[in-house]
Image 1 (cartoon, rainbow, N blue to C red):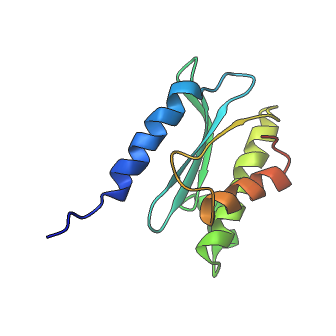
Image 2: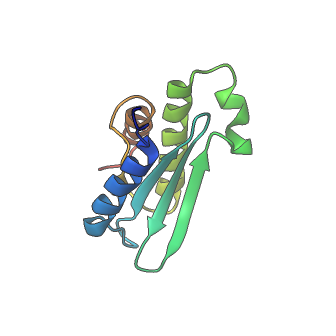
Amino acid sequence: MFKKVNKNAIRKAKHSRIRYTLSGTAEMPRLNVYRSTNEIYAQLIDDKAGKTLCSASTKSKDLAQVLENKTKVEQANEVGKAIAEKALKLGLKKVVFDRSGYIYTGRIKSLADGARSAGLEF
């Protein structure tokens, strides 16, 4: 009998290796992404102070009307734009992108493209 591969455990191991070198500061926070089966979440984190500066997700009430009748990839793009707008309001232009061990394709790429198109640099 074959063992079932636990993809989430592999992703978490990748994420811990990435986080060993990747960190955010107040001037250049870490843009962290979490992707569940149905939702996507993004946060700007200052690791030195241990604080979340702002966040956006597909569950946000302010994005509810924008996300109606859109695919998950389009929703991720809108979340990227929303997190970029919040970051620009805080005066943050540059961030460190933390894909959390996910492969840079699909919804993760779409979120990054949305954030870049709205003005974030990474």
